[in-house]
Length: 271
Image 1 (cartoon, helix red, strand yellow):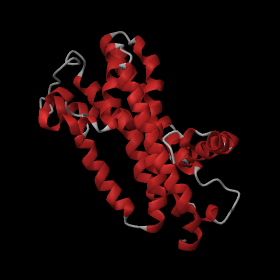
Image 2: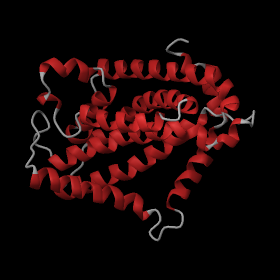
Image 3: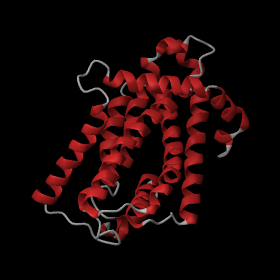
């Protein structure tokens, strides 16, 4: 399957035809998350606010950490939080992927149900949750600096390739989780390790030269750099880096979907 296969008319038209179902499932999942709680959707704002406060206190008041490089003038807690918000889109989706099919086993026997939309629903929910986190970040930035960067308009374009790459990984893990039930535990450990291998808590400039190549192979690291440059410096990503990220994302998505499409025939037998 070619790298452009995930964007082929047959696949995109299938996803487009199910757009209402995708949105309906995403809305239901968001509603169910806070159903029965006293504060309801308020938790969507309160949770990232508390996260920001805790990380800000620990790293600035206890560790006395400082940022180096081109973004050194920006608030260190805001830099950390922007990384956490961006990384959460990937980590939350990927951590949930191995159990997506298992938790929706009733859909497997329904031939007309498009199982491939389940990871998309998961990504949409996590993007909405990340949006609440971004809102908190912008409010704090506005209060502390008195202004917001024009580069915020670039944020959706930066998130798109990350979402496509994450979708490919989610397709692969959703399928693999059906056959290997330990995958959710393996993925949980892997994403925790990846969080520290991604420049969330430190500047990319501080990475030793011997590890910079490894850093460049991490698409999330490049996305973080582009997000921070847009939010704090108002810069649009370097065009070559941005196009390269899209190529990487489409390649990962194609492989993930190819595996999912081939293996889904065995889901009913396993479940």
